[in-house]
Length: 369
Image: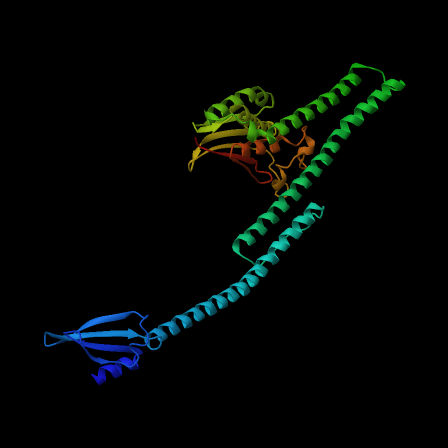
């Protein structure tokens, strides 16, 4: 039994061999020294015949010690790996935070500059995640829009003051002349003053219409209607004026079902026809064409007037802007601005195509119902 006992000793175990009667055949020297340790039993069998029993007790060395050492090493490895991971996470977090903090700080500084009145402040191109780059672009676009709206507001005030100055000056001079006795209150003199009052009244009406057009997006009452019916009604309402101006009004109108507020859309068509009537010389022709094209409702108003110079064409929808040809006609210069505003409220587009000396074509495009 010596080889078996030697093997047990090398693996850190103590063994005891009993025969079938329970008598001890062999035992390690330290087997009886530590009875507190658990022991394991196994039969000793040779060629199918049981010869006895082997009893083994493992000491704190050998496999148990190796297991404990392995557990200790594994624990140390886990602790070291966790510490290294925490350190790497900290370093990565610092790098990422600095990468994120720079563009965020830039955006915050620009917002504060805008809030303090610095209108030229822009974020510009920044390095960072796509969301931050998109946020910077949106902020710059918003700043551009705010600057543009502010400039439009200033231009509107300046243009309005300019438009009101002339009739007010004429009224003031006329009344002072009457009060000072420099002019007689003749019908012609009073009629001239009345014309200026009517001009002021038209400006006030146009401004009121423009303000309503600005708020049309929240005031529209949309329901199914036919653009052809609106075009026919507008053309009928102006037929007498076209006849008095010796102009031919041709109609090519087909059905186009849309969702719209007929009251405001009638204003758009009327403004387009009135504009064509105003700038087309006697003997000319104005054509109104209505129908569908490419899944959209389309209305064209074409005239045979002098056309619009290429330099003036981009500004015809600006408020109170009047081209050189418009200076010879009456008006406040906001008719097309009102039409464009109402068209946008209906989710449509209003465009102009013209060539000097070859007439003008206004195109109104709306989504079908």
